[in-house]
Amino acid sequence: MAEIELPVIITAIANSELEGFVAGTLYSQGWSVIYRALDTSSLELFLESMASQVKSVLLIYSPDLPGISPESVIGYQEQVRQVIGFSADPTSKNNFSGIFATPHDATELVSLIRGFVRAPLLRVPAAATQTKRRARVLSLGAASGSTGCTTVAINLAMELSVQGHEVLLLDGNVRHPSVAQLLALRKLDGDEPWRTIAPHFCVGELTKERVHRLNEYMDQAVNDFDVVIVDLGSIEDIADSLTDRRWTATVIHWSCDIADELWFLGKADTLGIHRLEGLVRDFSQIAIRAKVSVLLNMRPGGRKKGDHEGAFLSAISPLRPYRIFTLPKDSHVVARAQEERATLIEIDDRCALRKAISKIAVEVMS
Image (cartoon, rainbow, N blue to C red; front, side, top):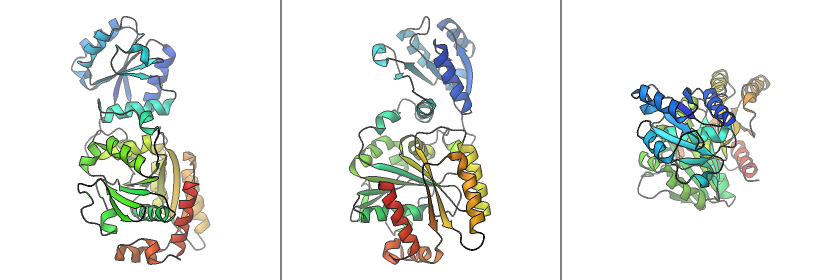
């Protein structure tokens, strides 16, 4: 994997409390704050002396910085990668470029700055995207491989549609899409944004082209459906993905900033718990908007069930999950569904796994 470019920050903020909040929050996320200007003279001297190094820098300023003007901000835009301004009353600073309302908390700040790192000048603020939408958005990601993330996403979507909700299932695993294969769907990446495969149930695939216009695509989705389920696949490297500017990380960015819930799926076996612990450890270093829920998939049976579940719950406790779900292990019925390219309700509507997913679907919408 190529080395990931982390954000490099310069602050030029007059209010010491706001500057300390911005610099401290970004530093705690592992990002570099290389200079903290007190006025325009010191800022301009630093930019001039470090001209070649600051071309990839994000400059965060406030319009009340001594000596600053709309014209000087335009000049800074030519020297650095991106300029972002924060003001308690951005509407009164219409002459300044790139002004946003001062973030209320660390999560809002990190979400906004992370967006500029990924897609400067194209970013739609997360707060605006979240307003006045119809759909509840659930993004599902696996803590390790072979966790059954796609199987859960498909069958959760089916159960919600059977219950009368308009559901869109999106394959957001842009490196290794698998929904089309598991449901025997052809040309899911065609011209239509998504395809109806059952009453109240549509499926789409997030291709590279769709990812490049993801905000537009998802704005339509969250207004056309009651529920949008995004299958992210493996998110073992989520901490790196959230500072990654490559298009393949875009769906994870969107899910962390815009989804209502981000679900971590894991297994209660030795390897699954080990990888989950790594994910939780990395995740504790970042801030996101979405509520975090956890699903224990393939719940083990037998005498060691209690020990395994105890270790699993211990591993996820630092997340303080919004909800915890469990699903029983039923390899036989899952194998049949995959072989026949069908959902569990079509294979065996009385099986324990199908009934458990149906109950989760009810809980999700309650």
